[in-house]
Image (cartoon, rainbow, N blue to C red; front, side, top):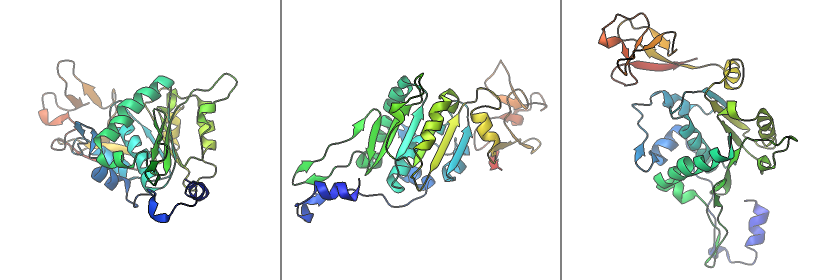
Amino acid sequence: MSDSYLSALTAGVPAEFVTVITMGSPVRRIDWVKERREYLWPDVKLDWEEHKYLEAIYEDEHEYLVARKAAQVGLSEWAVTDAFWTCDTKNGNVLYVLPGTGDVQDFSTTRVGLAIEASPYIANIISPEIEIQGYSGKRADRTTLKRVRNRFFYLRHGSVRKDGRAPHLKVAQIDNVILDELDEIDPRAVALTDKRLGHSALKWQRRISTPSLPDWGIDLELQQSDWRQWLVKCKKCSTEQPLKPFTNLIRRSTRQDARWSGSTRGASHTYLMWAAESVASLWID
């Protein structure tokens, strides 16, 4: 909210009757999520032991972040946290883009809505109001728009009309653009969202997606990054290597466990599991 708008709205009103919710205290994203978003959903707690690979991602606050991901690994929840954290502690507006209209509606209800419901802290900073002698200002809490303190969290689809226009992406100045499932978003929409960062001091961009084609989309973005990989250490030979299905990872049809390619058949200690007690893992550049 601009100072001029606030001054006009409260003109002639004694200061003791005006309450404004301002920006939250600066805090690292990793600390913010652990302290203020312990539960992803009302009945789902973020288990750091089962998701050790996420810690370094939460700690990384670089202005341009890219992640090529599998399904259901916690990256969309990371992106939701990044959006709330940006609004809360960086005083920034966020544009969160998903492929289609239906994706936005479902995501807003199941991910964003439940995140608010599960966190008393987030619920408390959503749709703040200016209270003037008992009158409360208009709240902004819709499927495609959440007001977080004095900033906004926009949710939009990445479709573009045949004539190249996308009026739904023409929003106010944006400080953080998050593209979720980049490979399914119209490339023209990607270019349009970049323009919304023109006057921002942050100019943050986050691009995450399951891959589709080599040398395109998220795969191309990753090639242009420092390309950090999650390594898993084999307890048999102590070899550290990234997971590569069909290359160094084999799934047996008779059981749910997996094992390293070339490991001794029947050696249970070579079975790969994402559990802290069975493997040691780390990120590398």
